[in-house]
Image 1 (cartoon, rainbow, N blue to C red):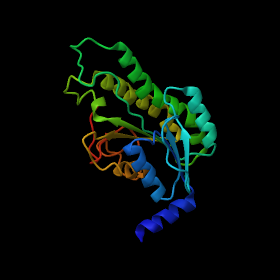
Image 2 (image 1 turned 135 degrees about the horizontal axis):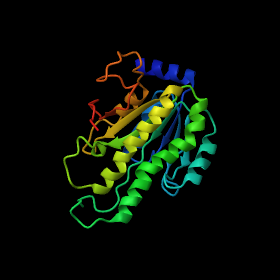
Image 3 (image 1 turned 120 degrees about the vertical axis):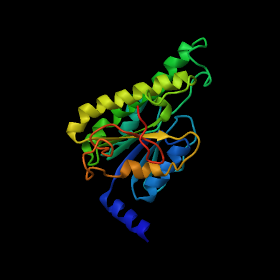
Image 4 (image 1 turned 180 degrees about the horizontal axis):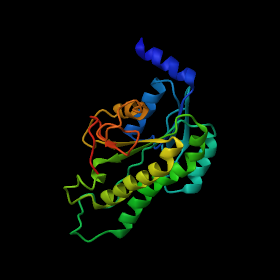
Length: 235
């Protein structure tokens, strides 16, 4: 009964979320979680890939992180004020077991950077005007614990680490510029070995502005990376 009540309230409020990257397991879990809560969901899928059927409060569109013109066209298709943008793009390039001591595949390094880091910036840049018109002004990004500089202990996955660490810094710079305008940010570290992906939606939605301004707990006044157990990942 409580869930039904929450969905009714959410639907009456009329909140809208754009999920740029809804095709993988996490994207599907996020889509289901927001629909269950009564949000209007715009879900972005690879242009030539399978999509979910259109449904009540669900609109699907093509999304290519490497094509800015295509992303701008997707923004026009959404065409309504947006309360939350979720960027969920994650692709591995090259040999995931390669290390710095192996011959480097620079093409893979550049491709990973263009897709995982610059692709996220393309999405934010395209949908920012719609976020400006919305009431939520929240930007959420899915990353991995492998993006952490302080927590980096392995030597493999070089392309992924190089493409994810700059993403953290890019979000920090966006935070510095947009937080004074009322924007908040959430960075969720996907657990590649499992976990409760549905928790990510709760973390993205939760308002932590009422919490004490403690650097260990406040997620409103700084960039924080958290995993599916709500643990903070140092970076």
